[in-house]
Each structure stands twice: as structure tokens, then as C-alpha cells.
Image (cartoon, rainbow, N blue to C red; front, side):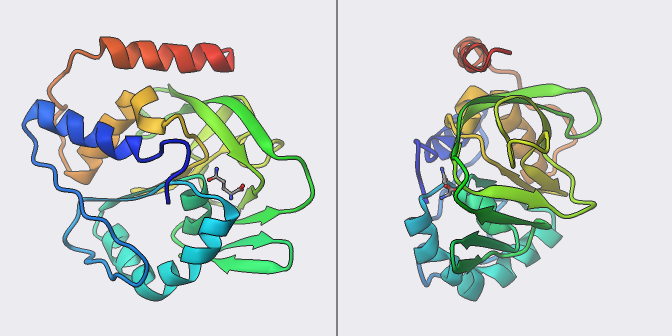
Length: 229
Ligand code: GLN
């Protein structure tokens, strides 16, 4: 799925790898196509409207669920944004329909008649307990995501709505599986997070080569300003 330029996340990962001389290969997996859990370092699902999710949720469970669990178990990074995030949980209820999720994150999402959660958003995250960083962007979702007890959120909402608009939590993280409602796209506005994902995906314990991030820093600052943080 791809909405609000979520494919831009892939372009950013690709370009930063190219600048650093890290090999990058992109493989798509469409409806009915199985995925090889051992062939990739990072798996990614962008956002989508309910209609798009209804088209791919069952396929995700039938043809990709097992491989995604195997990939997560060996430490591959799995990133889901918005509709993709929702499908990383157990289920997405929309009216009388219940779309299945792959169950990599211990959460479920419910869409009822309440207002959509729309606007600029900023959250504080501390992924390795090495100091809080800000992720900023844009959210637009009807689904409210409820984390099971013990499921760690990705971050704490500084501005915006996050998972429910009331819990103060945004996104979810479990090992190398990460879900968030933040578009923007997410990574061009938060290049530090892209580098964190790249290091985890490649299991590097050394820092990545620094890049000239003047434009990326400006994009991040602009997203934070828009959110009022
Ligand atoms: N369809 C989902 C919702 O509205 C996700 C939307 C999105 O990916 N922006 O909750």
C-alpha cells in the first residue's frame, strides 16, 4: 500500500544507502506473491485506505504472515505505516467487518463513528534507551489502535493524536517490528530514524558514515514547527 507518498520512505532508504556505498535492492511483493523471510533485511508496508486494506489483509495473512514472523524472529526490520501499521496488529474492525492482521504487534484497531484523527503530529521516542528523539509528521486515520498490556508504544505523543487521541501513546515497537501512524513521508522528515532502521536491518554496531543532512534537518525542523514542537 502507498498513501501520502509513503513510497518516499523507500526512496530515502535507497538514496542514503547509495550515498554511503551500501548495496540496496528493492523487491516488491504484490497480492498472491509469497515472500522469502531470509532474502531481505527490511520489510515495509505503507498506508492505505480501508478499501486498499480490505483488498490485501487476507492475502497478507494467507501468503506472507508466516514469512514475516520468521523474518522478525531472525531480527529483520519490519516497518508499517498507518494502514500497514494497523495490519501488523491482530485485527482491524471497520463496522461489521473484521480484517485480519498478521499479529506481529500485540494490538488491535477499531474504527467507529468517532472523528478521524488528522493533523500534524510529533512524538518522543527512545528506541535504545539512549536518549529521547523526536519523530514528526502527519497523521490521518479513522482507526483507533489499542495496545495490549505489555505492548510497548513507539513513542509518547507531544502534539497530535497518536494511537487513539487519548492514550498519549503513538505507534508500537516489538524488537525490530515497528508501526506508526506517521506519514510525511516518515523517513525524509526523520532521517535519524531511517539510519536507526538501517543499522538494525544490517545488524551494525558501529555508527553509519555521517552525511550532509542540511536539507533533511530542515525538513525535520519544518515538520516539528508544523506540529508546534
Ligand atoms: N484506513 C486506515 C484508517 O483510516 C488507515 C489510513 C491511512 O493509512 N492513512 O484508519
